[in-house]
Amino acid sequence: MRRLILALPLLAILFLSGCVISPNLSATSGSTTSGTGVGHLYVSQQSNNEIVIFSNATGDNGTGLTPVAIITGLANPQYIFSDAANDRLYVANQGGPNILVFDSVSTLTGTASVVPTRTISYTNIASPTDVALDTSQDVLYVADSGQIFVFPGASGINGTVTSNFNIITPQFTPSALHVDSGVNTLFAANSSGGAVNAYTNASNLSGTPNTGSFNSLTGLSQPSGLQIDPAGRLIVSNTGAASIDIFSNATDLIGDITPTAIINGSPLQDPAQLAIDPTTNSGELYVADTTAGEIIVYTSITTATGSLTGAQPSRTIGGLTTPRGVAIDTSH
Image (tube, rainbow, N blue to C red):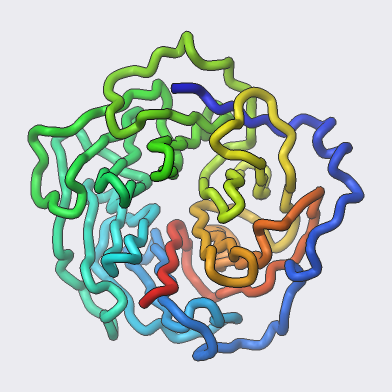
């Protein structure tokens, strides 16, 4: 295990100023378009207690797009996870408090209070904020108040869990999770401490990690979303700074690291969950921005470098209400 501490010192900003981004990150047409892409985009809308589903996800752009389906009747949904291989969506249903699982989610149409295929609960789950699935080991991680629940056999869990699981107590309330299945490493965002922790051998961890093996905390600005891009770079959204930081070599990071790229400025206002589409335009990053009411899409994310103040996205999907979670499935 090790603690991953990512800071954003002033020297980093000075160092990165003047660097440029790939032109592919520039905005495309501002017109509303739909029907030219592939896949499904899932968005949790916190205040509406719903999941909004868009088809043609990789081509959607603009405000006023008509969703193909809306799942209603949720209770303060937070972050979500798309298990694309199985056409399955996991939802941190904070007001439940539970995890909802919807199978064949890409086939849903219309607006309805859909009964989830499975509901996962546990006595001590009080306020789930994020879910992450290790698809290679079939392990589900749930971020809650001061705890991370580790559930094996994720594809079959249903009902109230009473045994056969671990609890990691990281001594902070995790605001976001991301699991690197290839190396069995779990990343957890520490919003109050301004850091990101990395836990190796994650599927076997329980109890409080040995803090003696970690470095001290220094800060990002309320990190709230995590992803790893196709180039193996760790991407962190910062609610406190309305920014996105990108760090090279995610699995080797430790200490006070200068980011490879910093995206900030309009249209970012309150970036929350992140999602990556590795199949399109050298990687596309989807950002759920709660205050802006948009899903903001940056293209060629794997080649982004430098200080990118005011860098314009390639697309935005607007007209949303408090989007908190975002997930994409390009295979259905």
